[in-house]
Length: 274
Ligand code: ADP
Image (cartoon, rainbow, N blue to C red; front, side):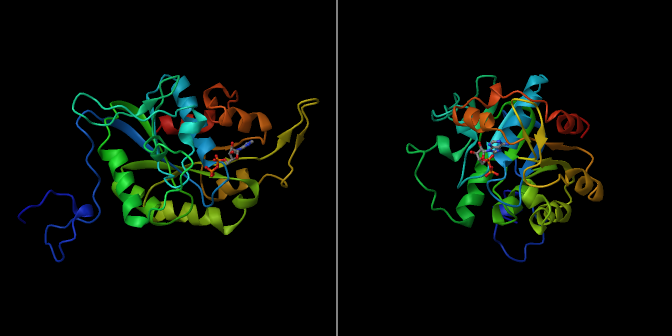
């Protein structure tokens, strides 16, 4: 077909015999990404962004080159957890470069592109999808071992775009104990199944509180179900993160990289096998 750029996902010509269904986006010529991993949650506020940040830190500590695409466009919180507030720079060709955290994690987020970080994003589906595609395809990411995509919560339009147009190798699902046991997580897992992407990790955030005085663990939201649910869903890497005011304070101060804890070791081990 004339004028075909071979990108069926952005083309609305009906009845085209060359159409091949949803296609993966091309990346910028300076970009080489080994594994794209999506971090999803059925619901907001369960610690999906914390999971993305801490998993990135674990991989970075292993000497991997890591980038984070903050796809939670209307509630972006990744830059804040790394203390990044400057707008991204351009390369010599004018392509946008991601910002780098103190330890070299590359980050791109809508929050870095607007002057007022508190302003709401009053954008709807097609614009949101376009932002995801541009963050992936029009940014010079350089060479990355891992690109972690912090997905918007839920199973809507934007997560679908991520699955359809990015070569996602695996999904890590983040939940809290209350959310883990209901249909919300089931939906997130089924969406990944439907898109033929394996769920490679399950995170139970705010799983317990550990007393700083005596070390006693209290499962304040009830007994943990993560191991049983992971077994049932055949997810072999799972982890539990405690609820700890120090974690939220460090995130607020932009010091995610200084949070200590080996909670993501098992999931990072699993990602290395993909
Ligand atoms: P989501 O991305 O799912 O919306 P966030 O990761 O942004 O959730 O977490 C929501 C809020 O809860 C943030 O302020 C974060 O710092 C805080 N938080 C998340 N997990 C923990 C935890 N385990 N302990 C203490 N605070 C947490």
